[in-house]
Image: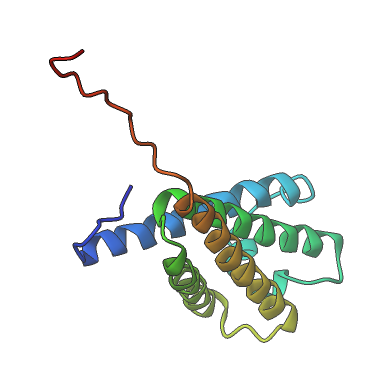
Length: 155
C-alpha cells in the first residue's frame, strides 16, 4: 500500500507511522472499552497513558494489561497492510512504543512501575516479532504469473 520499490519518501514513512499509531490506539480503545469499560462507570485517557493503572494487583489492572497485549497483536497484523516489509517491522514497532513512552511521560510522568515496562516491552516484542513473521510469510508467497500462449501462424 505505502511501500515504493526504489523511491525513498519521508512523507510516506511519516504517514505509515501515523497510521500505525492510530490503528494501535483505536485497537487499544476498543479492547479497553470491552475489557475495562464494563467494570468502570467512566472511561478516561488515564487507562491509555497513566503508568499507575497498569498493575497486576487488581482485576481491572489485568484487563488493562490484556488490552495492551491484544493491541500489540492488532498492530502486528496491521503491519502486513501498512509496512509490508519484514525488515522494517522492528523500526516501526520501536517508533510506535517510543512515541507511546513520550506521550505517557507528558501525561503522567516517567513510568516508574516495573509492570508498565514489562507489559510495554512484551508488547513491543510481540508486535515486532509477529509483524516480522507475518510480513515475511507474505514476502515469500509466490508471485502469480499469468500463462500466455503465443499464438503463431501454426496455431
